Length: 457
Image (tube, rainbow, N blue to C red; front, side, top):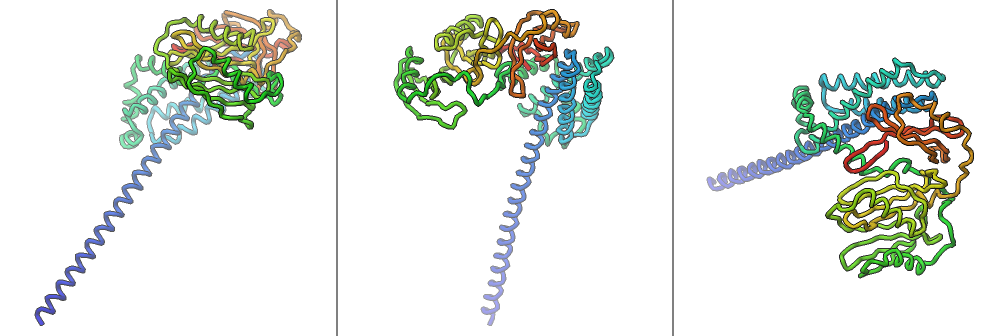
């Protein structure tokens, strides 16, 4: 009898132990699940804050650009367009600023500044829409706002650098709040500002294709001349283009029929382990794209020599009368934008990009789709105002450095013949385009000279 009771007690203990072990296992699993969920939630929140911050940086950059343009514009029509864009970008910057998990005096001042820019640009755009020119006080106010926007842009770029390098996180700022953010702003040095400004231009350059590079993708393909060719003919074109290369493998990748410009694609490997991709148009057998992966370890030739190398190459493969416009240098390679010319008039829709190696001047890449989409003989006889008449519509403070005629594309699928004026105000370079037919101010571009190239915005 005692053994039976003992056996029952042992069973109860074992059952209780099993229950405890089971509950403990469940608790561990639940705890781990909660931990994973919390970690995922924190990561999602961090990603959301990162996205909001980088959008804020972009929109503040746009605010600075439009404020700079508003100082140059002299006609109500173009001024209204610029100020309306400024109003929109300032509003979007405010929206992303509100998503950041910080409450501080710095952010309150930033919000106040963006709100002032938004309200003021909206009121001035209304004046322009009703054909009223901006007063001297209006321009002085815009100039002051532009100065603040440059300071804000620099500070945000410093914070962006700190965020990328891990010197602070949104969790840290959320936990520490005002003090951490204020210290972060106060610790920004002048040297950091200088470095960040350089980094900012380099970042802009990574996605930069040059002035008017968002050219028309014409359904007519005006520059795509000639009859259709077969793949064997396209292969011969590639062999001609790469005639100086020690080719090891030559692969035909077939016809890309659904591309904007139907092309035959080829992949080439040299004995020097260089991989080269080439695309030849089905219509006319034009070079559409060529790119080599060769690394460049030294910069020996000058920018002027690279410009001439690219121009000579384009002339040899059937693209004559090209003029270099803007360029970007990265890792020993310079990418140069060339535009066609007609009687010394620059045709900005007809753009070709050329990559030149700065160690020996070899052409490492070409992209001709802008030219093939748009190139044609233009009527450039519809000049109805003189150069001097066009100058009357420029801001009186501009110091003109160069002038001439140019055809520029518009967002309305058309082109305009303009007088192009390159000038400077307070060490800031601009390009101003005045319609050669009616003297209207058509566009303003800001020139950014960086260590890696000349960019426009």
